[in-house]
Structures are given as structure tokens and as C-alpha cells.
Length: 219
Image (tube, rainbow, N blue to C red; front, side, top):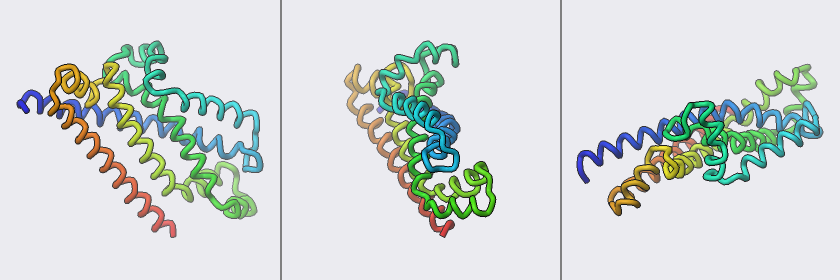
């Protein structure tokens, strides 16, 4: 492999990291409040509201059920409004975030629902407000599970970022398409696949370690 191609691989690797990191942070910032709302507005929870729960749940489900490639094309006008372009790594962050946020919301909801109801009842008996229950009971108790869920979201985003490359999103996916596929450079294709596999394995191992550590600290 030529030095120029190695430089392109390094550049593409950092573009992928940029897309995944920024979209993960933004999707988490959006997904955590959504997940909390979906949980606390359920029937028999601390802030039951069937209308809010049903409407928000429908929006989340609709977004989650849309394939990423279709979503990326469908929101091109929104992407142009937000970042001024529909092509490039920064533009790809918009659909990546919109795709991952509902996934993270459902992860948060699932993690919070695993908490023993007795813990919530005890907090209510001590006079804790709904916000105190959310911030001091629900989120801390579910943190180790949330970390595992967000790890899954990051792994999904790594795959989505590769798909974004097929539509001009940059990163390793773009490199694999332009050089590995269109120019029949098998070594480039294999190298990008290996790098993506290593990224996924590293993130999964890190997520497992952090979750295990948080769980031990809680105990």
C-alpha cells in the first residue's frame, strides 16, 4: 500500500471517529431526556401521562423503524439548513444523531424500567420530588445498564458512519467505496474492514469494562 493511501486511511479513520463521537454525544443528550420522559409518563409511574407517552413513543418508533440510508436521504433539506451542506463528515452527523437518539431513548427506558419499584416507592415515602427521584434514584441506579446500551449505540453508529460514506459522508466507508469497490483495490477494502472491526471490538470491551466497574461500585 502506497504512502498516499496510508495517509488517506489515517484521514478517513479520524473522520469516522469525528462523526461517531460527535453524533454519540448529541444523540445521548437528546436520547436521555426522551428515555426518561417515556419511562416516567408510563401508567403507574411517577408522572403518568398516557397522551405524552403515546405521542412520544410513536415518534420514537417511527424514527427507529426508518432504515438509515432512507433517513439520510429524506432529511437532506434539514441537513442543509443545519450545517449548510448535505455532503461531508459534518453533514453526516445530522442523520447519524437523528437515527441514534431514538435508539438511545429506548435503551434508557429499558434500563430505568429494570429498577426495583420498591426503591422508587421508598424515595417517594421520604418526600422526594419527581425530579429528585429521576436524578438521585433512577439514573444512578441504571447507570451501568445505560453504559452498556450506549455502547451498543456507538457500535451501531460505527456501522452507520460507514454507510454514510456511500452517500458522500466521508470516513472509512467513503474510502472503501471509492477505492476498494470502484477501483477494485482489494487491500484498501480489507484494511478498512479490519479497522472497523477493531473499532467495534475496542468499544465493546471498553463498554463492558465500564459497566462492570460501575456495577461493582454500586454494590
